[in-house]
Length: 347
Image 1 (spheres, rainbow, N blue to C red):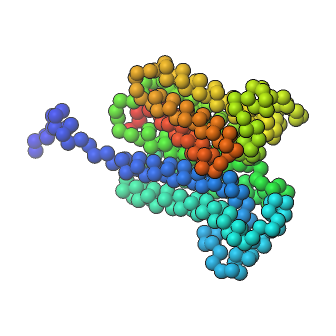
Image 2 (tube, rainbow, N blue to C red; image 1 turned 30 degrees about the vertical axis):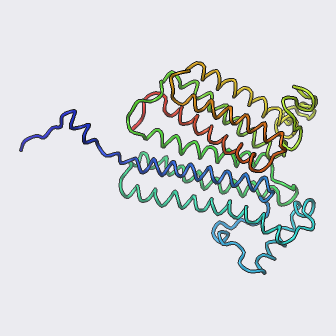
Image 3 (cartoon, one colour; image 1 turned 45 degrees about the vertical axis):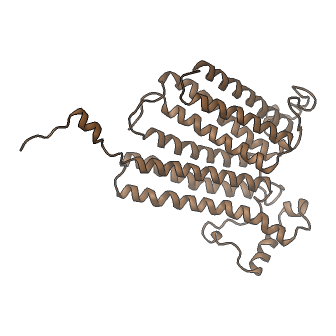
């Protein structure tokens, strides 16, 4: 039986099918869903909706109250927590239904995201589109998503007994886990791409530093949100009348100022923004004219700084604040994609 061989021209004309393309599309869709959930989570935070559901029911909680008796029970439970007793005395049932919707929708998206992950995962596994070596890290992403749900309830529970809002530490943990999941989805999708020209390996350290800066800045932003630090010191470039305001270290021990002093927390967030902007512009000048990720990243950084300043000066309006949060994740995603593209591409 003769041996059949393909010439180079025939190989190009009839390329090997990219069996991983549907998997990559699925992972990018999952990343968009995570970003959507983060944005809805931002709405729950900005509208003080996060404590409106005082029970964690992973299965039955998917169904919202359907009768007036159900609504009365949910409202009664909410009236027993400090947020209602201290801040929302006299709230009407209609007002409660508004904040309840956003928290319910946030949790509903989390459940939907789980189904949107596990069903295609099992289908692709059955179709043998990826090996067990790839199935293991993808399964780990599913576990991380489930852990994110647990962290969400852990965060909510911190505001049900003594506080009128959730702990800023737990909020930061919840947001950080969402960020980790978002970045992992993008990383895995980029690294399973077909062999082609990628970003130069020489750019890897610069990309890693940029990604680290963006991650630290997003976590710092979580503490700003958790303390409502953006509601005060609404001037720029001066802060409380100075470039470096007084009172940054009034708490003892000193490290508590980084997480519990609203003045210090906002100052740190501003300072990291300056460092990040200067670093991104320096990188763009370094690789100017060579295309790639850097022009897009530099643009996102400048836009993000502008949105941050606008959020502050306008006293944190919901649409602008949401744009600021969503763009932060998009910037982190771009930095992760750049880092994944550096050096040799895995197939």
